[in-house]
Image (cartoon, rainbow, N blue to C red; front, side, top):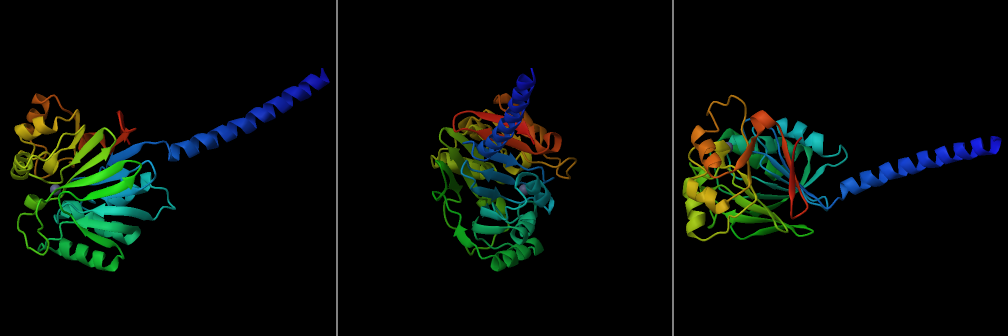
Length: 289
Ligand SMILES: [Zn+2]
């Protein structure tokens, strides 16, 4: 009787030890689970998309209008991780690059990808200064360039199709960086603030825009997401990066109607918060973060 009690005790201790090992194993598996993770960060009225490849490589596309991006990243990135492999600035408007200034201060960024055009604003000057102080490789965004994140995950730049480096612009939307994130069969189209003019140019040039997930252009403005473009992309799902009660009244009812008419379900940051999409390269899952 006494012996059997002892055995039971040993048994329980062994089970507890195994339980702890299993927990550690599942945590380790969680870090390298073969999944691509795309977070559409809730940064208010602006764009910011954080991408983590299955091997841990990280890319941030835009940084929103202020430092909120830092607190959003802090919820995802472990406190000891101070590196981001690449930052893409789609265009020089403050709702895309103002937050990136703080990102460059807090993280060691390996590569900065932008169209390299000049823009006259205090935010843009602060961004240029931050770039000068960062020891990053600066890459000109140009259609056809591919950023290889490893494990078959790539970010292919689709726009601008011709160099605008060194030119000064009053209409940054017309040169905004457009990119396709791809992991095996799974594709996410990142549109920045691209408007119908660029959408039609991409279609005329025969650029493949077909994707599973669409980041809706220009916060759901009616001047983006034209019907022809939406049917060419034919996404199952869209995400609208938009702040609550924003002064532009984005997203426009016209854009919402066009999405609905094309059978495209959508999430929006103002009502859903940060939206996370996980994919194994074939299927995907959406989580509100
Ligand atoms: Zn914008």
